[in-house]
Image 1 (cartoon, rainbow, N blue to C red):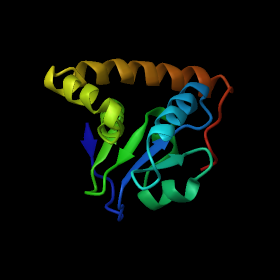
Image 2: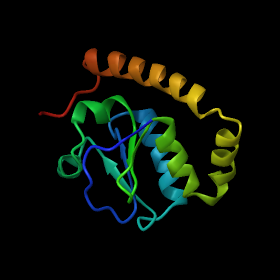
Image 3: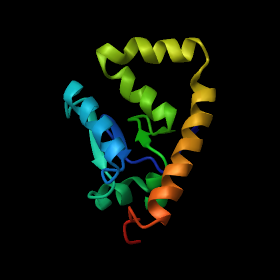
Length: 134
């Protein structure tokens, strides 16, 4: 699912992730080892509120699901954000192409949304993580 909120200038892919989530952080660290800052700008939404505000991304939306912002002004959410990351990493490009060729992106998006909603409900509403102050 793509959506355009605002069109701030971005020279590379921006990925917004929950640095307070151990699973999310571990996966992002893996991707960070395989990319450079020139390829992807990683935004920890727990620490970088200014970038969230600059891109017009609500904190709750960013906590619920991973978002990526392309230089062309397109927002990518969930599986589509992962596919954008994988397209930037040579060893993962084949996986992104395969998922798209097999048209698995939509079923995986539905699964991701279910998982992300459960994670948000379980962690954030139980008090184990917190939404940043508004």
